[in-house]
Image 1 (spheres, each protein chain N blue to C red):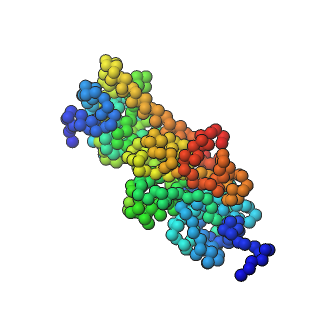
Image 2: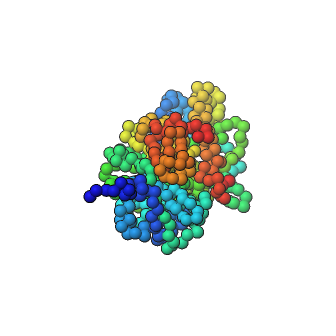
Image 3: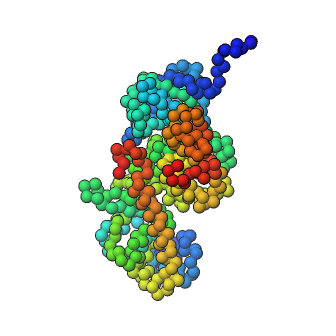
Amino acid sequence: MTMLATEIVRTHADLLLEPHWAEIKSIIPEAADIATYWIRFVDSDEQEAFRFEPGQFNMLYLPGFGESAISISSDPQDHEKIGHTVRFVGNVTRAVSRLKVGDIVSLRGPFGSHWPMKEMEGKDVFIACGGIGLPPLRPALYHIIQNRDKYGKVTLLYGARTSGDLMFPKEYEDWRKAGIDVEVTVDRGDANWNGRVGVVPMWFYQFRIDPHKTTILTCGPEIMIRFVIFEAMARRVPLDRIYVSLERNMKCGQGSCGHCQLGPYFICKEGPVFRFDELQSFFNVEEF
Amino acid sequence: MRYDKADVSRELEKIPWFKEIERKHLQRISDISHLRHVRAGEILFREGDQEDYLYIVIEGRVALDIFIPHRGKIRIFTAEPWDLFGWSSVIPNIYQRTAGAVAVVDGLVVGIDSAKLREACDADHDLGYLVMRRLSNIVASRLLVTRLQLIDMFASPEDKNAK
């Protein structure tokens, strides 16, 4: 068939620019000002066709309020629904907090780079994350659990401000049973908290990390990431086996608008997951 | 359970830092140390107590807490195996505990007599240097932890719960 010159050729990029309507199926409160929204595309073909890699994000659009980049926190193999764990801190996400089950939102995506699931096969994996940094890593955990024999020792070291701020606590036991060493710490504990008190980077010394076969994944507050990298480097983990997921003011998801630029990179396009050797020269620059 | 000096030496030798020091120094510290089994909920010391021992966790977990009026006890740190706590007892110008310590699970700790450790460090400056260098590392690590707790790194600029 001959294509007319004027005929629009739909590309993958076009699809990423086009909003797709989706319905909120359930809302699970996770912590103060944080909830997971389980969403299905209204068009069942779109739902069936949707695929993402662990670490990627969607642009969630609310008419009249705008768009916000939200990482996908669900199982990549679950084609029935998509989970987005949202922290209510900006105009869009505060509007999201007022939505109810059955409401319609719009999604574009998935966008961005992903955790190196293939490259980590045969290696130990050490995941160090804090606060809202766990949701973008949960798909990676699900992937590892479903392919457990492909990975070596897997450790999740997760920190939050208090025990009430821990994400997905009901899943920790399942993850442990699936062969993941789950270690949790809080910044402040009350008299009823019998777990660890302290910050994520300081607990590195408690784990035997073999620098020759371990890949580090980290996500959370940038100040935490900085010290996680410091501890990983102190243990001689090569910089090209440290992966960081960054959060910036992402607007277009295409690397076009420049809002999320970090040095030569657009976080929404080249990121959010970076290998640290690519980031190192920009990472510790004040006000960058 | 009663422990003898050989038990104390054996437990100290398992701690990486003690593998780096001379035999005579290990023996000196062992001579002024005792092993103590602790049960979950057992209080090792309270805020305001007189300083007596520097502790090292061998097994279990010990929480340090500070009592805040109208809020109760806040846990500020937990010590895990090979962690040291009660270090201020070795510093000569602090005379009382600045936090309480409670075992949160059953465990085993080594208690080192602080006054005798200070005397040993004064009498043998090589030992004193090793002990103070180790304590400096501990204090630097605690300072970093305290800074990260103080800045409330999980808060966002708009977070109403931020400190």
